[in-house]
Image (tube, rainbow over all chains, first blue to last red; front, side):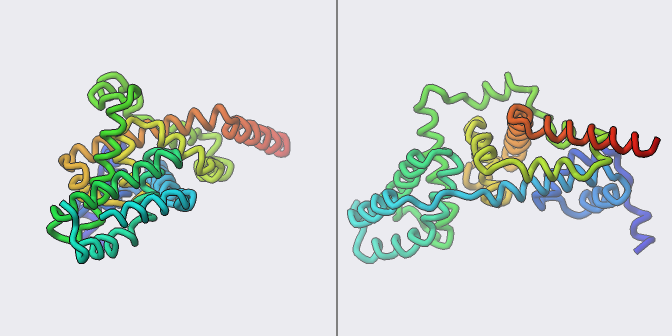
Length: 83
Length: 211
């Protein structure tokens, strides 16, 4: 494991920040992901940034919505009856 | 052309379980119950009219989301307040790299708790929904589909029928503008001011204690 990490290229904070959103959106793979994760192990600022963006994304995914209105349900029932 | 009895039953069986999700998406896009009801109803009507064009019924959900998204874009374009994305991209450059984290994480604040987490916890759903609702249309769609609905870049690309690079770019711009709006809201509503004062008082008390 240690030997493998030696082959991971170090990246700058600037480069790491370019990859943050791909990372939190689960779109970062392979070498790019390993490089970022390696950077996050050693850079507190970038680590905190990633945690913040994850938290905000998670907050958005939990937004509550008013229950489907009775009016809409009736409109849709009527619409579906027409077809 | 009118659907046969069997097709009607198929349509209902496929669409009814997805109504809540469609309505939720419509609400996040419109940020208004009445408009969301209209949008969801219009999307279902169009889906019903075009049901025979759906070749793979396993793809009913992305198909419905695409219809709803297109209906939403058309409705927005018909309104006077619609800002074309080209206009936004040319003129709103300052929002491109805005980071709420960078604004909050001032060194002295980091000594005390976790101000970023506290800010997010203090924002109400209504605050966030209002900020999303004020994003330019194409950016709003990208942010809602990715961050609220949890769709992948590939799924969003297929729904909006734009390349993945465009999805990525709209998301980046949308998130940046959203964070800027949340930052302004936090300042105007006093969430940050109170927090900052609180931290400064605690820092001062800590220094006095050390003396």
